[in-house]
Image (cartoon, rainbow, N blue to C red; front, side, top):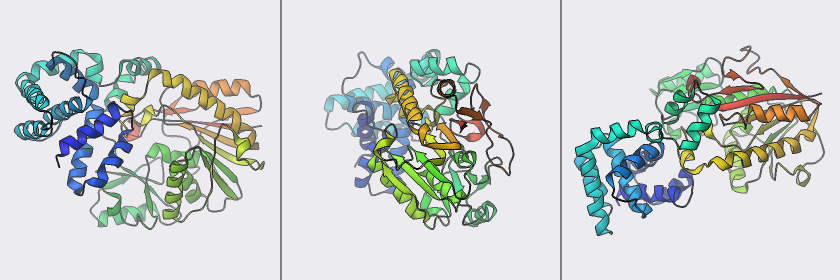
Length: 435
């Protein structure tokens, strides 16, 4: 088995078939026994997706005409990524990548020529790439323009952060242990970590580790969840006896955190349209020994699943472009299109309109996305408030014990976390009360 060939085939499924990188890797990994090989394949695939626009530009400079064979193109990108960004010895990177093309003799000679020419002319090629904005920032042109429009002062840092590997962050189950005690457990396993000052459940690891090495993971002491996502439970301010609705709940991290943070809820109903993703919610809750009412249903059509009883709190984790989590899912830069944003904005509006009647008077709805685009976030909430006289925006308090928010940028409505702030993913939150 040639790991470069496996990586190239995974990338082809992303580039040609539009499959997510996560799904493509999940399909490939069952046949890979070695954990070392899986880690190498994953590093290649994530790396190529992060640096795709730069690598693609350089490859175009090395070819007389564009490659129509996606498998061969993917293999060439894998080779270039090793030479530029990995500590693989150049001769090994070239020989193993060329070997992966052995079933296509013409491709072997082409890839060999491309990689050896790159090694000879690397400095000049990289200089050319630095002069091309799309290549230098490794983002598609439409996304560069959109981010520069919304965040002109912060845009460059967002691009840089999007191309970094994100930290691994843990959510301590405070219903079972304290953060201080769990930090001691990590120290006992020589896992370096630090608490996040403004989120009492969050611990950031110095280096990622496999979850099966985390003490107490199988017993539900801890889960993996970015700090930005962990803020939701505190912002929702759930109280004993509340009936809570979690809309678009999969994969269930926020669902679980709400249940961990308040043991005396009347009921938590988690809704998602995707049955397979709802299965992940069920699995997450089982590991943590938590219970919620799980409903597979369309959030935009509550009549098909709602029992008519109002909710005291609603978390609407709206479908979005996910541009705030590009660090974790770099294939978003390849799969997302400019025209998707308007369609997502319309869907968000439909869901907002549909679930608002389910909120009891005096109740709170927390609108959340993992996007950094204003039209999905503050502009969406502004429009909703303008159309609903019984809706009032409330200030955000992330945790009653920590006081006001110590994160994010105040917008026209809500607060925006930009990618990389305090090592967090990009997220948006707005809290709306029903009068």
